[in-house]
Length: 452
Image (tube, rainbow, N blue to C red):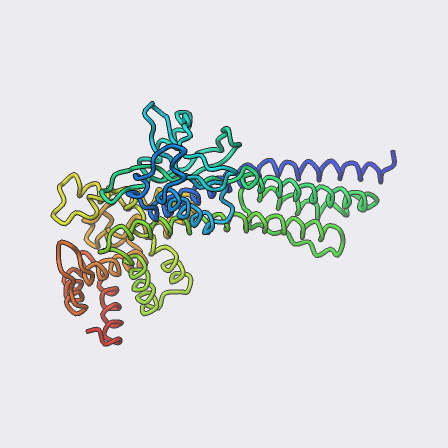
């Protein structure tokens, strides 16, 4: 065998092995992120959709085939169709009520299939996430294989005006949609292999020493991607196939970064939908998160914060109270003083919020906006009792914006304060609860707008 053929064979084996190795490390992680993003999206869609379904209307529908002749059933079907139309790609949108037997569920509403099936009984005891949907929004941990194929579903309780859970709303994704990412990745891997093999054949006659240096740089870049550095780029200005291989590698990593960012964006949108649904339950807090975000970004600009810091506040301040999803509604909307047990439960919402947003991969500084916005300058806040030295300016800004909006908004247990009165209260707490320079920045803003 000639030297040229030997080099060609070695290059073919090395490039193929490297691409397969990279795929073996990158694909499982990317697929898990894709699946997790789908779970959070479905949970958010189910929670938002269930909030818009009339639970009292649902109770009027008998769980049998005769239901299709009733106006209430047709109205329910229209509501389900609207949910499906607002979320392209959903396979089925349906509702179920509990049956008499343990784990038994009865279909009531159903759109997306060939035939509606009110009254159809189904044993869901092997799907614990579906059963848990009667307690709160949830989603399948992994695709479920059933009589209608393999799907990933999100669930949320449907409640009547009395707050009682009367059924659950389910939303399903097609199996093809779940595994489209895998098919795209497989096609992309095939393209990479073809390019790699063609490159090896073309470069087979080149002296090994000449090709060693650029190949080594490409291998190093692949290893860094293997270690999780998806933003890694390899530059090989050689003007030959190596440069093309590096460009292909960079397109691959850019594609993976884009897919990851899209997953994070979808997850963030789902969480924002949950936040809107949470605030919509209470007319006294509706729009609170949006107002806090507006105040926080304006304060940050007045304090001369960087564009990146302002963008961080604009993206995350709206989610500062997302953890309240894990607190019972009767506690959040209670018009009288909270008991000690209820107060401790409410003080856990920053921790719950941090856990909800953990899949986003936020930096500690970004996550602090969620978990630390109830800390105080004197170290007596919650949940970690941090003092001024451990509280960033961004957190301090959200704390002041949150308190100001709460003070100037009406609550069932007190009337709203005027802006001037709220500033007086904030100044009274400056140095102990609030950061003085943040309070004064807000005061200047309000003064400029004539609010004081």
